[in-house]
Length: 548
Image 1 (cartoon, one colour):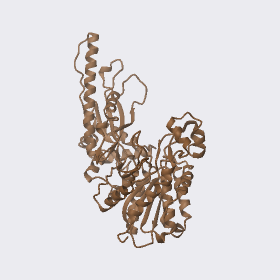
Image 2 (cartoon, helix red, strand yellow):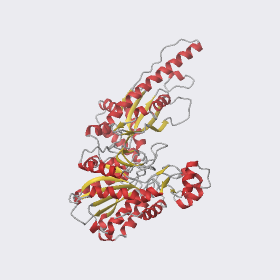
Image 3 (cartoon, helix red, strand yellow):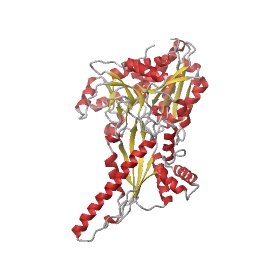
Image 4 (cartoon, one colour):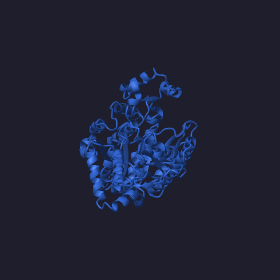
């Protein structure tokens, strides 16, 4: 059995031509195209129930993912590999005047050649070894590898041992509604067919880890993601009396200064280090222009994890927030002292004190006077969603502000909470026979060579749907639930099903550069003519029965 690089390239171009920007109904167009491709195969004509759509849960856009089952008939082998790939892309506005060509790689390469490109991009453009276009790298080429694997296994199921369960999912670039909707289906399929799931394999893109990195990577495990967020409440004042208040923007700016790209906050485990936290949004909440200083500011961060659980991250960032608050107060007192001296006016210390609370601390305080608080906030979440607000982060922020209002405290403070989404990290350590086998397969596939060595590494470094195949311990998840406003109403995770899957994960994907940029491109030789064999060997190795 051998996969076809030419066919995978053909499929990639086919899928890239379908615009499927995250957050649009057109994501489902790719599901339907893949269904069309697979439904023509004799296997799926004979077994149409093994190819079906899965509607996204709580999705006003009505998007649907596609799932496929392929049962090998060579022998009695209940082992199964789960393969996943996302079919959405980020937007195309970054292409500017070339946006209409973003999903037409052949025309795009001609148009790009007319631009003043960076030297290394132009070198790739003229090499003939790269395809450019939105989704060509992230990740319709990886999806095409999985399609071709299904095609080849379906050609001769009598000589295929083991089983494949595939999910082509929507919304990965957004809130992972596609994958989260497929998780219960994966559990159902496992029970219905008595499958023994071995691994979950994603074919999402890979790239350089640093600017001079020559390697190609096979990953065991995946990075996790939390979204620590702050509602910063100051004290408003007239701009003519700036020391009479406490600007929430200044407090938030100090948080950004101390957290954004701070490598001290990176997570380290098993010789791997996550990227540091990154600010994803910072905004004040004053609805109008006026000469009143700002009272409320919101900021949230992307926080990658390898080992730190939600409770640990809360503890770390509460400490940073307290330090930030105190530094701002010290700075203001020094500036106020300087100002009063210059004005020859009497001076006294400003009244501010550092106050940082976690969401659950505020919740418990309000609960003492509002015994029906949970119902009240759940109703508020439903009301917001009914009004047309779909951004889960905005819903969480609204609920934090509501809780703060119910509390009635007027002093400046920071409230630390988690915004959706949550992506658990997953380490492959060799703790189970499946993990031992996966690590050995990846080590065997690693190749030391002078040009572009293939290396096995821990933790796929980009946020992906692989996170939804296992969970950390129950206590850590409970901390997340208690500190994520709207959990269970505005944001739903199938926690029990994820815990039931409990699979080791690996990412073996195409190689290229500049995902999410207008210069997104895939290296043809590796991605179409080396990678497919690596994916196939991993799948067959994990499916090998004890008799083989």
